[in-house]
Image (cartoon, rainbow, N blue to C red; front, side, top):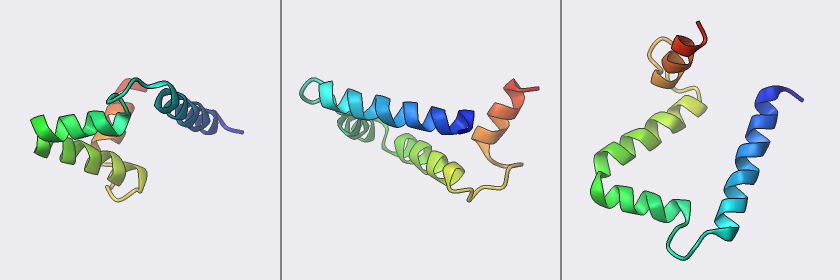
Length: 74
């Protein structure tokens, strides 16, 4: 198993754990609802960019998340 596989498992387990123990009105999706109310376009753009990044819809040279990671790994 690769390091990135372990990271996904830890991330998924952390999200599930948080959702199970979260206080009322504090689920992650409810937080996104609040963000949509206060900053609808910024929230949609961030969700779209992260989704497009994970689905490889953005060429690496234009992908902001790839460029940020590349900047810190030089």
